[in-house]
Image (cartoon, rainbow, N blue to C red; front, side):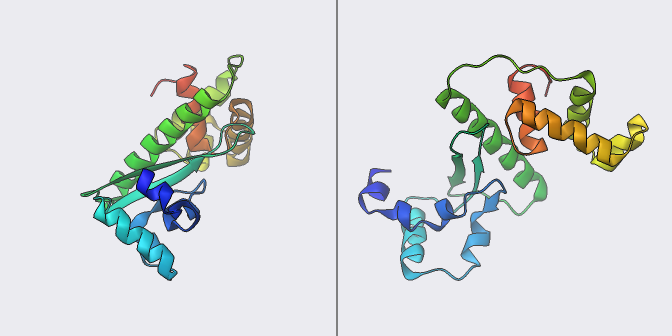
Length: 172
């Protein structure tokens, strides 16, 4: 890490620049046109055994985002299930990091319907599927999930599932 910082790679690192609320796989970055300095950073990362990985930025409430990257020598992220597991773990640890960086706050209260919707999201159901289960519209499901996200201080339904589990409102 000191080598990375001493060389000023943070300003040119394509991995860091790709950090957003959408997960990015390093191999996807390598397919993009990159500047010479960006290629140098990727070459140096490989020198340290970081051949492939995943990065995502997680924001909790109005705090600054926390970028989480999972990388290694033999990280294979061709399988969508592997990508989902790494995305989940990265989001989970990002929310923990964001929580540790913030002062303590009151526990969040979610309605029974919001918790039920999050449970179905946890199980991989779409808004349409959840609406069919409850006999309501997908738009109403989306509203329940949006309100849950706002109360939990997160931006995505995936983050809401993790944050609700961290606050013990939902079991993983």
